[in-house]
Image (tube, rainbow, N blue to C red; front, side, top):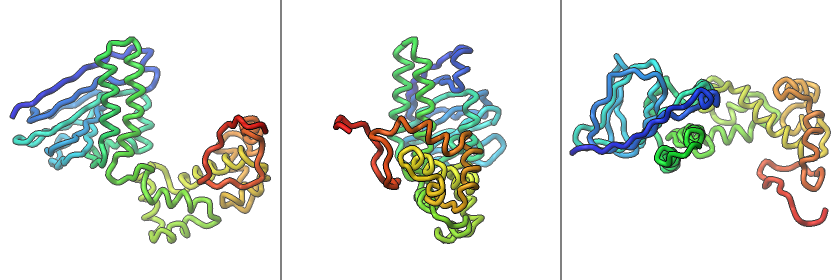
Length: 297
């Protein structure tokens, strides 16, 4: 059994690189592909194996089994070595990319150099984005470099959502935390509600979000506070209580430190953006978003 391969490469300019993320290449391959490596690259590559199986190894390490659907992260400066099954082969697509923005994706847990083999679930959205990059590479448009690089952002998000340990919204644990975050209870009580110890909950949140538990909960609370400030006349004291803080002054200090303006200033800056004026009802997180209406006010 042989193999088929197609690939194209981009040469971004200095201006393109200042965007923070650039696409360097894209490829589609299937069959009994040659063994790759051992080698070391100077940029990142996302290799998505959609069919088949094989193996992967970091230079000097043991081989890990790769079973489709799976993602291989190739990172700069780290030797790697991999190949599909020598009889059945596999089907893959790959995207080469680089830029200063990748560091943030690593910090946020979207790119995982420490876990180079990642099990995936549904890869159809991922392959759709790769197809977009392929079209950019084939089209020869002067916009192709920027279009392809923008698609890499979408690709990294799609790969994060496609991880086998996640639901489309990031996982049932995070969904539960989004509800618990607004309750006036301690982080220890939040862990107990999930049937976990506090260290277990912290570790689970760190794996899923690359942020600490308290920081994640604070982000959820502040997001909700912004919604209430922007869409209701609720006093700041009531906004604080609605997101789990009895002390309005403490809430205001937290809000100002994280957002950069006080709750009152934030409300003033958003007041004109509210269709139909202020509401006196406390909106639910499940309410549909506010939309403009043609009806007279």
